[in-house]
Image 1 (cartoon, one colour):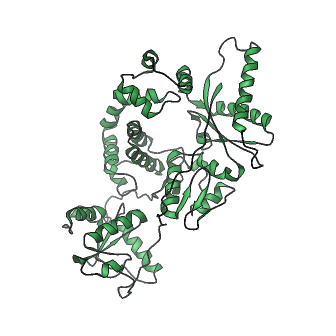
Image 2: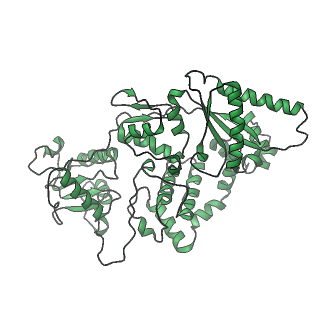
Image 3: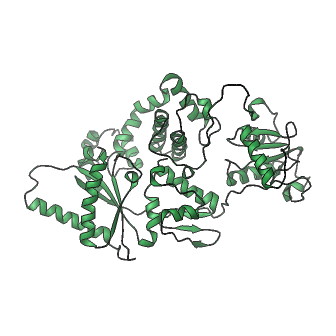
Length: 480
């Protein structure tokens, strides 16, 4: 095996400093003067006095709740910041009726109020769809059955109930999935969206697939998934079709489309991104052979990608990764005694194959990691030169493998280790959680507390999870 080295560092992502952490709202009685927001006490701005709304933050998130609250008030709706006896309508998103009642009961107890919350018809539990339709009409629309959160039917066939946290970083997801057929189908749609440069749609399908992979048992009906986070109507339609017919027409059509197949082939070339592949596709280049015949100018990395296309698109086994690791460790020790090498990426999460091999390099003495990658690459190239000079390579007895070397100072090592272990969706949700729920900015270099205005030190992944207020999830559980 011969490594093709890709030395990379990931730049820190920007975060929105206005995000605030999610908090459980205190339940107060109707006589509490702090119940209503100031803007709601101005009767001149409230058009609809009969409906007193409360937006449940559970699964909705604090940022979205704040936005929807402002929107509703701008249209003349009365919206309470806290649940109280005056509330007539509770609006929730991705919650069932029993989940909302359970929340209200627990909130009653936490607020020091005992007994049951108001019972229907004193308060209506409504899906977010009623609220959004009302916003569109600029008035409270008529409540229909589809808007009402139904209580579970007694004596009916019980549906399996799943508790799925909204963020992937709150869930321990192993490599074993009970719903791989379903999640693989959604992953095809996600990849198709990504190859079309529709990142938002791609992330939506990735999140839906991740939820399916987290579930503790196989799904037999799409109805069992109603109310789970990240599973929208499109994903549910695909799931239902597969459960009923064994496959999805949309997924199969996507896999057979010329553009999907061409973009997969072209982006499979080392050094070729989506934009370049899309430009080539519009020029009529759909295959590797067509690219080689086209006379397109290729940079050094792309030339290596074309030359070693077959090798680089062959899965790397764990045994091969270990062998490459031994080679990298030998090089690192030779050029910088005391430096450390850690296998990261999918293999650290327990995968048995991968498309590349990733290593994190550091040195216990801060500063001694400077220039380490260049020294390692130079040492490896020198060894290759000696091998050729000695005539040991009269024929090809190796294959090319992509190797990513990431270097980090010891002070940033824990953040780099966490950031480069993956999976991609797990890391994305870690950063989203930090920004949306903790008012922090997380990258592969640091964790910054926006409220305190300072960086938080961490010497281990466990400390980073603790800073974020999350239960620690080991690498084997980060396969979202």
